[in-house]
Every structure is written in C-alpha cells, then in structure tokens.
Length: 364
Image (tube, rainbow, N blue to C red; front, side):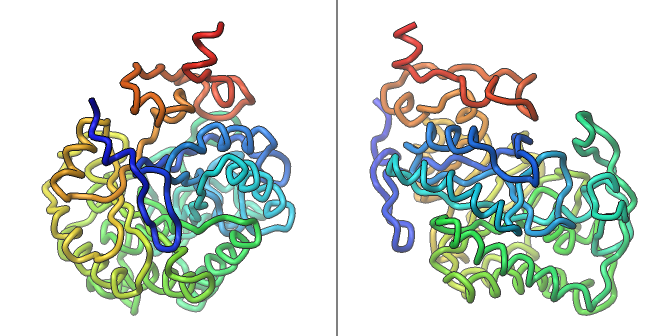
C-alpha cells in the first residue's frame, strides 16, 4: 500500500490542502482571442481539482512578457474574467489553485511582441532555443538588453498581475523564476553580463527576482506567494557558473521574505535529476517554509522523500495531463494512462479535456 502520508491533508499557510500532491504548471497553448483562458480551461482544471494544489500554466504579466503562441495573460479585464471562470470551477470542486506568473524575456519571437520589436533580456545574448509560434516551432529572436530604468516597470507588471490574480479569485500566485525565463536570465551569469546593480555578484543577479517577490508579497501577502526555481536545469539554453552559492543565497532571502513555498525543479526540467551536482538539502535547510519538490516524482519516490523529511509537497506534471484523477489512481494503485504527445500544444478538447477517469474508462 502507498504511504498514506502523501495523501493526507497539509496546511499551506492559511490554506488546508486535501493532500500533498501538486499539479505542476503545464503549458498547453490553448488560450482564446485576447489570450483569454477558454471555457475548456475551466473544465480542464476542474477535472484535476482533487490535487492538493493546482498551479496553472505559465501566464504572462504583460504583452511584452509573452513568448509562445496562445498562452494566457493576466493583464486585461477580459483575462481576469476568463480566469475567474477557472477559479470558480475549481473552487466548486473543493480545489485550491495558484496562477503561475511569468515574463519569458529572451525566449520569445518578434511575431509575438507588440509592434514586432525585439524581445527583452538582461543582456543582448540570444538563446539557442526554440519557441512555439505560427503553429510551429521556430528559433527565438535576438533580444535587446533592458535599460536600468525599465526594471521598475517589470516589477510593477508582476505586482499588478498578482493583484489581478486575487481579483480573479486565485488562492495565490507562483512567480516563475525558473526554466531560462526572464527572472532566471538575470540570476544566471550565462545570460547576464550586466555591470550595473543587477549584474556581476550573486546578490546583484538575484536582485530583480527578490524585488519582484517583495512587491508581490506586499501586494497580496507573503502567505499567498510562492516562487519556482531551477538551480541547475539547462532549459532554454541557460547556464550558471556558481549555482550553489547563488541559490543558497536566494533561498535564504526568500525565506526571510516569508513566502509560503519554494518550488524547486531538481535537475533538468522534464529530464534527468542528476544533470549536475547540487545540494538540494542545503536549500531545504535555508528555506523555513514549505518546500515543494519537482521533477521525475512518482508515488514511491515522493513517499520516500517525504519519509526522509526532504520535502513537504510534491509536483506531478505530465501524469496529470492524461490522468485527471491522478490522486485517486495513486490512492488505489491503479495504472496510469499514457498521454498523446501530438496533442500537448494547441488545439481544442482532443488531448485536453477528453482523457477519461478510471470510472469513466470502466463504464465505456
């Protein structure tokens, strides 16, 4: 039998989660006109509301922040109204839901930028990676370096998006500081060659992330604010020469801000856990609130890590796509349904809301 501790309630700040299983953010590229979440999105998230916590797909804080086709935003009233349908549907099922807020920085394409201008980045260094645009994958565009006087606007965009999230009845927000996007581009010296107060030292490179988190926490409360990091993931061609001291410092500073959880991608995002040496226990010891572990977890590994006290919550990603009732399957030991890779990105209900639960599959 599985370790039931993983499936028992957990207190996350002022929230009581039904279990320690978290649905990780999963980009699906299905937003409608105006980058508003579709009615299908409300169905999709409500189907998965038995997770202790749902974290939505990454959602841009501004028009400039977009990097992929048909990803939702949270900076217009129409987008707020669209997300409100999602949160209402999840709450009606007794679920809890945070929205993940991002700015992609250099991982974008001129076709997605207002006015067709260059994407922004800490330094004018092009990422050797691709984005999803015009219904296909294309190389990202050459970015321009953000001016010092533009950075307060980035902070303000995150703060306003967090306020919009609360207006849309989200239980909280997760700030995306991982996977090679803008905040991580500042953190990691492979993308950041600045010589001002936001470049060079460990403290300087962490500055923008910490300013964003502090602003969001002041706006909506630290108990509603989480942060995602990926210390050694090479996602989107990002690299860092000193990940351990960099992230030890970040964990200490985030803990001092009192945020409700730290979401850590252990290893390469969606890939091997042992991609590079890193002491995750050091982060765990420095961050005093909830530690959410991510990457390659199944029931056995999550239960073992929980028993060892290595983490408090555990994120499951792709298994939630094809198993809307993943928690029930974990409880019963039932096999997991396989996903269809061809329907991951873009499209409609096919491969999105039509994966059956165990009960539905047995009734067919």
